[in-house]
Image (cartoon, rainbow, N blue to C red; front, side, top):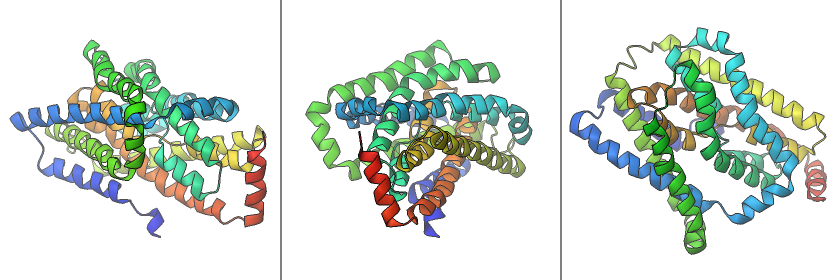
Length: 331
């Protein structure tokens, strides 16, 4: 049962939201937190760039059919679903939260949980590493474009200042981090377990500053419990449809079972680690809380549901799994 309960990081996010709800940063304190958070976001994307190896980029090209399916699911299927389901989703939530759903649909796939769940399900882990890493890389460039195309016409807003921030806070640190990988790559790989707390601390800072500004603007007064339930239902519907389509696509295109598992998990996920700091850069401070809320809820729903699916795949007979792995290893 513990596999389906919130992990420590999710609990930390919930506690951070509660803290911001009762003790929001305001005035001079808010300005200080704003500066600290901007620096933390830059460090976060510097770390993303330093973690991504050239080998992972090159290896991703060799299994291009699988990665193309994951790419289309992440950056085409989700935005189409977000727009197509608007009559249902808009009925379940406020317009501000629907903008958050569209922003969620534009995000890249998550890396850590996609790989971990693929491993639990005994899927094609190397392909999952490449596919999730490629999605994270391309998302830094593509997500702001998708936000401009799909989100802005539905109530979002991107200014020239936001475009500048994308380059200064996201792209530039990412590129510098990747260029410095030959110098710091071994250190990064050796201390991954410790450095993950740097990532998580950056996200918690973003969540705190975002919800502080949103609470001051009246987020909870304008978001009753019924609306929160609506967001949970909406994100569950979105995830269920994405899981069904990625599962069917993997089967009908003739991928091996190991590759089907990789497509299922990598193609149906969305990254909170990328979404929270990117929302901080792209949107006005007062709007970030409502926009990030659906992303946080989707994060927990995808972990709980996909954990159950991974356990289902993990229970298949060992001899069948060996055949699948052997088949996946064939050129």
